Length: 160
Image (cartoon, rainbow, N blue to C red; front, top):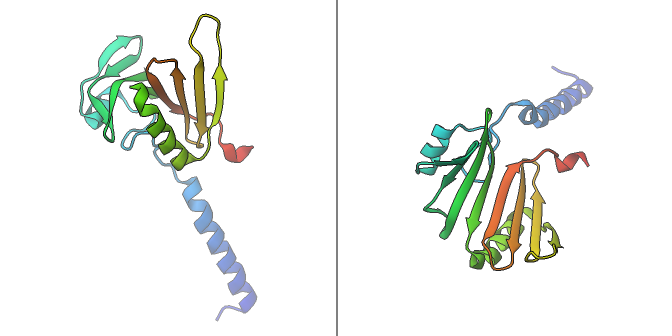
């Protein structure tokens, strides 16, 4: 029979281990889109997205004909490096902006937002979320396309 004090200490230690174990185990980082992970290579991206990716520049790939839910994506751009997927950006029609922003706010909370005015350029509205895994940036410039960009976060907000 274990004495009560030792049993209590053992229970506390076991609880602490159960809490810390998930933090110590390696896990794949989800990258904004279910099924995609930061660092994925081109062939895996094409398999997961179900489309062929077209090279449009140095380590930049592009896809067309995709949707987010029922919202059509004009273009999806993916930045790759030697380590695989590093950034992705959706180009959406301007009328999708309100629904996308509402969905992001519902999922991640209120964003940091600002308006940027540059002489000779349309005014830009910018919204940013950092969920600890992804840094998500939404941009709207005048009547141009609405852009939604994801990249791995370099800062875990819990550290602040």
